[in-house]
Length: 476
Image (cartoon, rainbow, N blue to C red; front, side):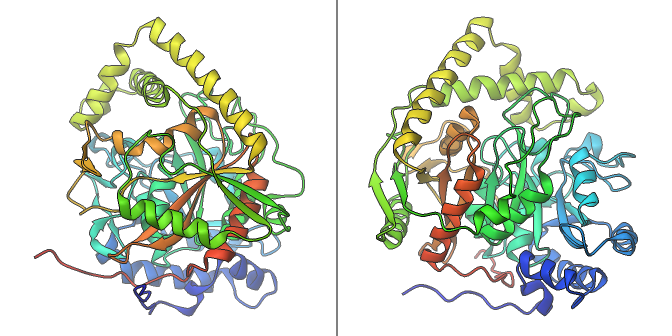
């Protein structure tokens, strides 16, 4: 028998979906100020337990509320922004001691775009140092805890965003993803996280041509995720790889009947990474529940050699590039694991980089052909659920030892390498009552179709989307 969902004692407005809240804003049934008050009240209620939204900016948000147009896309809706993304006038630390007191004068262009479309930034969400790692803790703010059990971690690197959404602190929260940083915390906290194709969300960063790290939306429902992607997306010449979004908008596309759907299920992606037996059973059971006359699930694994080594090469190259562009006063204070990753990047040879480029092209072609016979690929987000917050990464999964903190994240590598949209959808709970997400990988530039299918599966799985009170537990 499934465990009951925790209750919710926050402001009633925080129970609303983002789409419901925006509809009320546009009809004048609620004001942006009322939603901001509810958000700030909920943050105050839940922060001691989960430490998710670590830098509130109430004064800046109240100023924005006074300027918000309720005819805009988000109509004055409060949102969270990850602490890797600059917001003008708001402390932005990247979770690293060398930037602990940094307050930027200029916002990231994505933030400016969101604000122009009616978003009200209520604060910054916690992240691992420089976004490195899938357990959200850093020396500036400490650890973010999982709202479903506060002794457990919330995943990362968008752990603060996911935990805050699950607890009802905000209705939408921005994240970013290279090695599953949107998808892992979404799975651990029972929310939706979408890694879009590179260029959908224009955000230049320091390495604007790099297609691997992307910004993306997180929300409690698939529709809300689509709404947020509409607000985030669009061509901006500051990003050399950005391009216009699909015609018609992602929310409208998401709400259309997807018609017949064919899902290819790869339980462990051909042995790419180990999966705990309970995790495998939950995912298989969820896909069995969604089988219907219009939804066909077939076990079908694409042939994908070289994923792990190829991803590691490009990640190390990106780390080295970022290190070379960052002042030594900041990089000298990085944690040891981050220093080691950077050092690996500096040792890459031109042949290793060339081999990785060729391997990535082969992986893309294999996935292009695979996604001609199925609409989406379904696979694990991770092979294991949340661990105690003190454990940086699992020492072993299903009896197989982990060699480092990237090993257990291998299911995230495929979509990143191939530039494919990927979404984590809540589909159940494990024996501990902790959420489990299913990863859905869509076709090239196929966000609209992916969201359509995810919404159809969301309806079939019937997992609760209501925010929860943090389940405060203590270790013995």
